[in-house]
Length: 180
Image: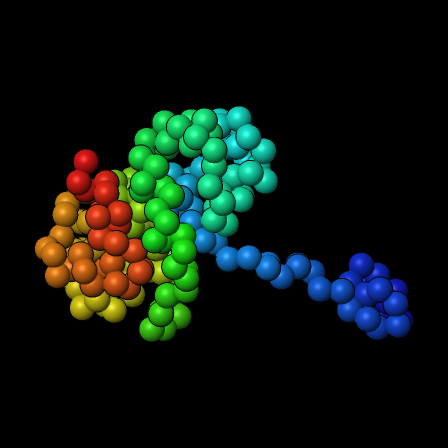
């Protein structure tokens, strides 16, 4: 009877099929993926613009290094140098960060004005962290964090260190957009 109601969810005799397969790999290149999320670029669109397969781009996000030809095309398309996009220290470090409590990213953060700091904004999207919660965890005001996302403002060294320690990314990469 159960199988007749939901034939796609069950193989036979009540053996349930999981709807989505579990991923075996983690996103290792968080900076590249954060920039793509911030600029709202899909992996397939990036693959078309660079001239590679979408599986190749997925491999780059998972930690693979592109060859020199594709690296130069990718850097030109995204307008970031290779030492920012493919930093070995970040790729080799675990992408797991400590989030104090459950949070939810709201798209209204960039609804009024676009993000100028794509790395910081993309990391908030990647980890699904609301701007207000992030500010609370760092003992800052939401307007202060918003200033660092929407304008090319470089925070004080103490704030840079706290943000860099939170995301486990060096401050010179996290605030690259503010430096150029």
